[in-house]
Image (cartoon, rainbow, N blue to C red; front, side, top):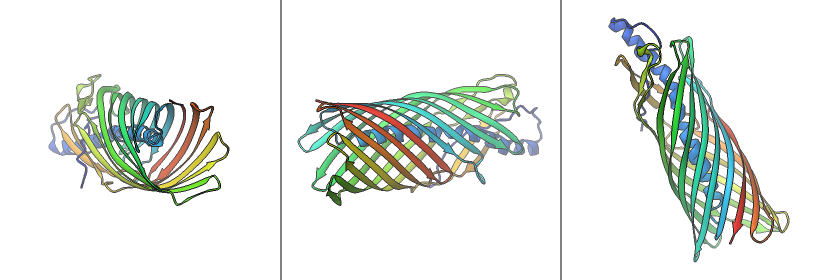
Length: 339
């Protein structure tokens, strides 16, 4: 089902002409200039995935408080009808606590984000740039349960980013600024099955299914320079329904040091085109369809955990992803205390 995503339409510093033929041309041009704001959708997804990865990695740690930091970079490409490319840099702090209730382990987590996104768009021969300076939060809860060699983790969470935007283009007389919120929530499940465990080595296939919704509030750009350069953004709403197949490898290198590696394939079952629409300050409406990115991608990672003593532990992680017009990496560290 096609996503109903609305975006900003911008006149781009041109003198208003009453000709309906020329206005029709403005409609498509305006929608193309609006394309840069669509990076806010992928920025929201990046925040969700960062927090969810940390929560799932710590979901089986009972009576343990874990604090962590990670940095992620995600880049999206422009190709064909896709009129913009994005670059997202995100820093995140996480605090997770897990508690055992019999065989069930429940955890809660709070994450804080500091994120910057840049989107370079093209409109015919014109090019422009949208920059977002954002901060926000995410709250999640997980439930983990194990039946012999099978274990499952369910996660649910929600959060928000507050964004300050700046749009620059050769077609407009002065930069346009704005502020808006991005809200998101997620629900997912991962199921593991241990197929080999001997000689300090463990091999565990995992399948996962995750639903994420990201919604961007409507807003109007500020009036700086000619009023007709200002655009208005309707609300944006996109869903991801991502299935994953992964294989996890673990090795107890010593009594204190454990190493892990994971390699997986991820597929978005809901990867339809994105429809952008909106109006400029002259109430000229426009819309355009932009293909999504990341319908299919591979992701691999390495992690290490070192037990300082029976209470304290240190962790480190790194990951890479690459797929359809999408590339990224992350690095992170954590400190845990078991009660």
